[in-house]
Each structure stands twice: as structure tokens, then as C-alpha cells.
Image (cartoon, one colour):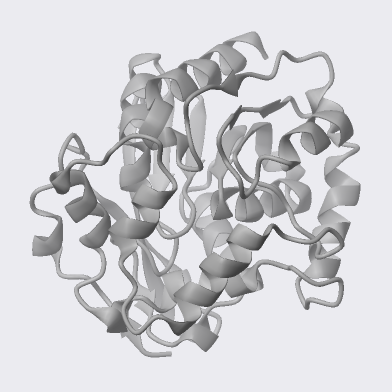
Length: 302
């Protein structure tokens, strides 16, 4: 596996993101290791809250949420998925599989960091990975927050806007990462924020992760990842872990999942699930403070 690592100087001028990165090595699945990055804030002895980002963002997306949750006395850990942010970047699209991303993230959170009683917050791919981890290791988790995400099995068609995004990521000669993040936001991102989303990717050779991820979403019933996700659904729908559904009102990609999660997840019963108005797919950008306050209130109450 050929690995690329973004030079540190690319991250020298990140607005409102003062967190020093930490690193841990995880097995790459081929006999080597990958370096995964994460930032941490708040009380070291606080209840651990893991914030998992999606495609094509990185932990920078959660900067407002990190600040608010740390102020609430929680221990906040925001990793960069492999291929994103400051984490190592396998250079070939074929290096990236759904199963590998689940295992890489598991190795970081459960082995390297040895976290327990985790509150996991997953948005976009952060939910696809995080929900699998909860289903496969429920004893390590205390509660779940699903925010504009889901756990596709390919049995329900994906929306047309998602297919256009997938095709663009695979076929475009150049992938404009900031433009795709902006397209998922209701608010206008200032130039320095757009530059921060571009920082992990010095050139096209670093973008195998963003290019690969859309195609890894199970979107047909016979997708190779569909059986594992179906098995996860069977477990998740019986777990009594508190399960908060905190979606925005303006996400054309995942919006239809909110009522399904609220209805089917055993731990979602009896909870007041917020709908965050005026926010798009990347609700952390559009309404990060509001999202964080819902998360903090949920943790206090459960």
C-alpha cells in the first residue's frame, strides 16, 4: 500500500481550530501501519464523546461542536478518517473499502485510545462507520447521536443527488473539495474556511479517499458491504443504548433516514429528537452551536 502524508505546513493557518493534533498507528491490513490523527479537548476525565466526520471533510468540520462540548466538561475526541485531514492517505482508490474504514477506526478508538463508555456522534460517513462499531462492539458504547447519516443496505434506492455526487467524485479530472463542502451548507463559507477544507489535499494524488468513499456506500442489494450492514441493523434495533436523532431540515441526501431511525432504534423511544432548522447536510457548519447543545443535553439526561 502506497501511503501519502500531508505536510504539516498545509495546516498552519486554520481558523478557529487551535487544537494540536495527536497521532496513533493502526494496522493497514497488509502488514504495515497507517498513522491516524485526532484532536482532543475538554476534561481528560470527562465522559468521552467521539465526533466522526464524513466525506469529503475532516475533524475541522466539528470545530464549533468541539468548543461547546469541551466547555460542558466533556472529553471530546475528533479523529480524521484514513484518507482525510491529517491522517495518512492510501494513494489508490482500491485501497479503500468500507470494511477497512470500520476496522481502521475501531483500531484507533478501541485499541490505541482504549476508549470505553463512548458517546459516538456520526454524520455522513461518520455514521456509516460509527453505527457499525456500535453494533459490533456495543459493550464499549454508552449512547449514540446520528446527525444527517444512515446505515444503507442497498435495499432502498439512494436519491438522485447522491448518484450525481458519486459520479462526479469518480470521473472529475480535478475534485474541488471546498466546493463540495460548500454545496452541503446553507451558509456561505469564508475563504479561510474553504482553504482549511482544501488543506489536507496538496494535489489530486492525495484524493483517493474522497474519490472512493461515495462508491463504497451500499447502494444495491448485492453490494459486498450490504450483509454486514443488515446484520448491524438487526443488532442496533434491539440495543437499549440511548439513541438521539439530530438531523437538519435541509439535507436532500440523508433526510429520509431520520424518521426510520426514530421508529426502529430501540434506544430512540421516548426521546425528544431535535430538528435543526436552516441547516444543510453539513449541519456542523450551519448550526454547530445548536447541535453541540443538543448533544450535551442528551448526555446529561441519559
